[in-house]
Amino acid sequence: MEIFVDDETKLTLHGLQQYYVKLKDNEKNRKLFDLLDVLEFNQCYSCLVLQVVIFVKSVQRCIALAQLLVEQNFPAIAIHRAMPQDERLARYQQFKDFQRRILVATNLFGRGMDIERVNIAFNYDMPEDSDTYLHRVARAGRFGTKGLAITFVSDETDARTLNDVQDRFEVNISELPEEIDISSYIEQTR
Image (cartoon, rainbow, N blue to C red; front, side, top):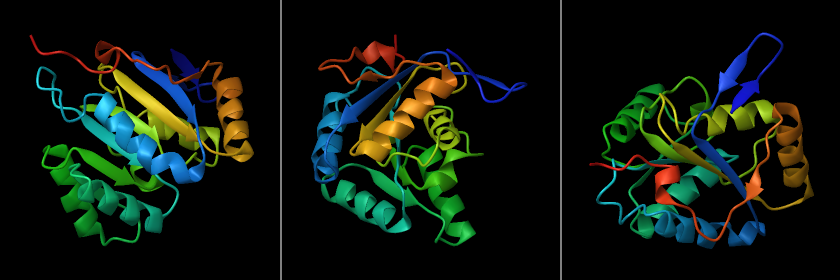
């Protein structure tokens, strides 16, 4: 897939599968936990190490979701703009070194931070606009690897933003199917 950001800039997202899930805001946590389990997060022994970035809309939501994931035994860590820079960098390094494999982040992480093996990007909260969407989902499937982007759509504003993304970038984002082939978003070890 080739995405034109403006008349002169083109972003190519080869190998990135993009889907959405319609649900109510209060259903997001359960759906996220279910998807992390279904997408082989904890069971993927024959795969390269799986890393996930989950984008949220606020610092408070970032802190709360990361804590909830840890309570559910997912190896999560949070990065947000309210942290001192040295703490953000230390947490970024923990994620990069696979000490924590799930990163819950605000839009701060959507630009400028490149991790080679992020396989899945979740838009837990829909971004405000198509540019932010693009920067978020582009965290997955970088450097020629496969990736998966899943966006939660919980109201009409979210649906309009998703339509804007599809119109602007001329891409079809389908509803998440019941089953996804693991090889579509992660490289298998030999």
